Length: 246
Length: 98
Image (tube, rainbow over all chains, first blue to last red; front, side, top):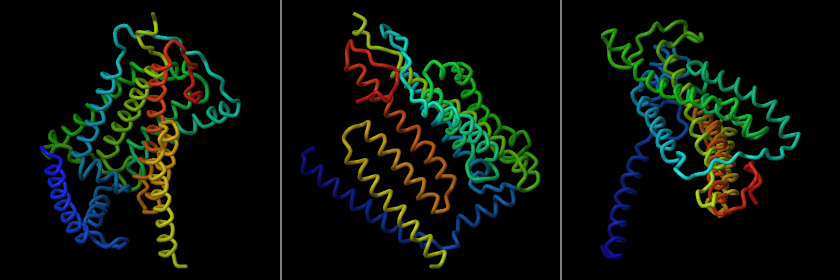
């Protein structure tokens, strides 16, 4: 394909995309209006399902199948990273030397680690009630764990991070999401339909299946992100190129 | 000023922050500095989502954009530089990059 033809093809496609975008955006409700067709229906459905956090109701109830797809993507991505970053034959394993850490950094890390981990657990547990949920809390939890590396030492991180257990937890939680959807089928309803008792609006035990799916995603994301970071850390800190050993 | 005006002002300020941080991230050439600028961009985006009343998205952005992504970039840079350094193994910490 000649350069001129390629430019023409691009300009033609760009014009079509631009026209479609303008057409779509002018059809949107105006910015900042109180009434939104999808929002109003989603919030009404969330209240009907006793889920105080409407976003969690969309994620784990109204569009739970989409979330199943998303968490499978995350699982596949972590799996891909594990395969790509595995230790190759000939790669040497070095014992990382502990680096100097400023006392203030150590103090800040030691203070923040328990606070961050507690925040992560809180965000996961209250996913059906307040902003946040399994994904957000899971990432916060994984980040809190890695404060051990920033504030103290790689070997301390290795001790607080049971990698084999986390790998199993990630796979189990990812499978649990798909398996929990079968509850709907068992009750003679649709796959992933919210068939558990809905409880009292605003209580921790409310929202039925939403809270359970949310917890499964929390476990999957927290262990998945930790396992992902572990692969990067192993490559960056421990493994050396084979040529170096000669 | 009415509350609506205040909220529009905050949205405008957050948008300016996002545009400035995103431009700076695109113009920064050194990956180590770029990871820090990306963290600032993540923070600005989290701020924008908060003033747009989307706290769920803001939390995701804060956790992924300001913590995990910059850390992955820093670790990747460290691995690449470590390989290039040859027989001169460096210390353990990621912040001893020049």
